Length: 149
Length: 420
Image 1 (tube, one colour):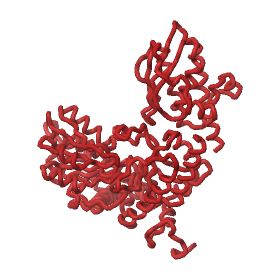
Image 2 (cartoon, chains in turn blue, purple; image 1 turned 30 degrees about the horizontal axis):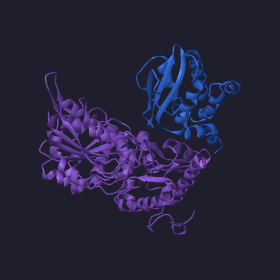
Image 3 (tube, each protein chain N blue to C red; image 1 turned 90 degrees about the vertical axis):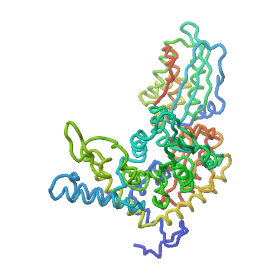
Image 4 (cartoon, rainbow over the protein chains, first blue to last red; image 1 turned 30 degrees about the vertical axis):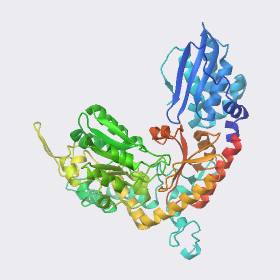
């Protein structure tokens, strides 16, 4: 159960129950769909870009606790960030959930550190990364449906 | 050593059946997962293998390995005899009229593809219809969908009710002069529903429509008699009935196999080849191009012998006891809802839990050593029908016990604890 507590940290359970920015964003000028066919996780992200800056972010959809909490935490983290800052966070997050960063580097990731336990559960990495992959496609202006399969 | 009499068959409703002795046949059931004893409840995905099957495959490769149907040397004859004897075992197991009606395939999926690509291509034309049901596995949807697309034909779907049963009246109404084949799942892998296939076959035959049965979940859970059913095609996979992966069988009535064009071309399926013309081999070899899965077929025969020795009725009774007990225990959990509540069910329990996604349920119960399946179970249209993105599914086999059902229930309590 200790590994599981590590996976299902309070931050994740809280964001799963009460996802932030869980709405369709009327001001969005970009949308992208993220879909994980294996478990049926399916989200749409609404992004308001102002030049290179993410002005606002919302999402809707359904999926497991890890995927939903990840989308929620990501949406609050990326608000106001530039494209480059977002890419850097994505990079750090991705390395962390794959277990490729040292403990002190995890601290630099702030709230995202709540997902560090995912690295112990290889089958759940794609749940945690779905939102980020989808957001990445928005930032790269690739409008197709993103899957983590 | 404890004598038989000293072992209490406390999990069984049949006094002669001792589940603990059965468990000793399955080496993997002694293993631990994450420090806990393995509780394997993912049998609808694949079953574990008894020593009798594992040893048989080892013996084949250690002592009998050779190619079949060619060569005059001793080992080739030994391998051929065992391979063909495996076919007879399948024939007897299904009560087919002749071993010419048994084609070895990779599994149910290949069997459906074979029938769609041969019988289907030869008989389904523009404007024709193929009838399936709303509770099919993707393997009995997609091959027909591909055929219909190619031919300009229409795939029709017999509806299901809220219990997860096919609406027989709706099915009957969809049978018409344009229907060239009906292909029906015997037992739903996602819900456990046992279709009244005998009645459904009769209804189709009344209109002269041939019927294929996807028996992937049918064969593991009870007696299948293809002559009594009068089905035209019946397919199953070895690995879901305690046999190896990569082997299964297609039963087809001889007159259909005779009329059907071959599936794949190559060695073994021919009588003679010139660059101008090839004449095809006799049944069933016409449908077995290339070196077959010899070890697989022999392993499958060992699995069917194993199952036959226990007896279909004993298996059905034991699994039904677990189904009834499991249904009672799981239903008692607050916020748990069972999807698929037909009166006529095999030992499959699909469920959802308020506040916890099936994928999270799967991870948490795995932490307790309990293996269940989570997801759409290769039945996405069915998930849509029940308005759930996915379910968690426990499926029971001959070696499962009531104590394992209790372990599942206890592990779900942990899920509730995390997500409370």
